[in-house]
Image (cartoon, rainbow, N blue to C red; front, side):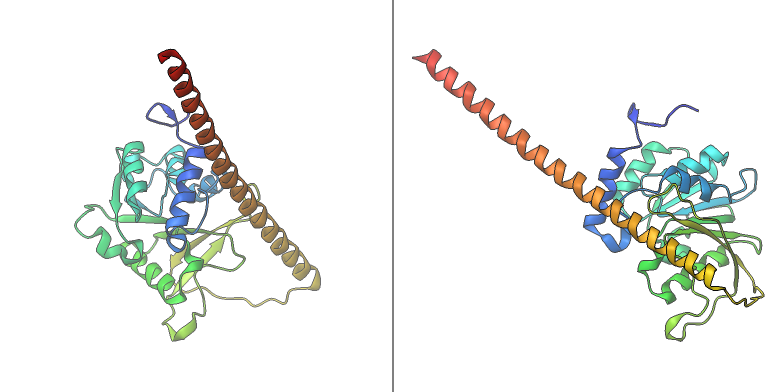
Length: 273
């Protein structure tokens, strides 16, 4: 399949990075990340969606559309996709890129209300790129319960996270009622920076089997956590350096323009004498 385009130009790369950086500076709690999901992570999320299934696939927080693109590459018909995005600029971008999909500007944490009167088919799956770890336990579980209420019993909620633990808490703080769900988790997507995992939630109660981890397992988990912290710092520093270099380039371009303008003005004075 040909590379997707936006107005005739490739739509991946620095342009989307810049959009995410700007959105993150405007509202870091809502955006949650300084760059879009990588294609390996997006593909890992899309693998858990049945491309030939019935019902809508609702994507929460699509941003610039990397997961949306992976879903379409997976074989999900664009007409099945409902993209719920809070940021108005991202919504306009998504409408241009995916004209056959439904783009809804609204609050994903009030999902039933946001979708009310705007969809006319049942929801089969919810795919989320929301920054859940920035949110309190009660808000995460309310979202999950709301999503389950829109789906049949076999529906699934797909969420990625950079953390080691499930982004949907089993034992929420503050006495919030526990939402009955089962879960499974993918292996780490090491080619994403920082590395991430994909969690799949279904409605129901799971049997928890307690095991005793040996010292070797604990050391491996600690090493992975340290590696993730290092990768995150490297990504943060890379983005910081890009922002600094762009500022320096902009400042230099302004100086060059001013010098050129002054030079033309001097030349004009000499001609007029």
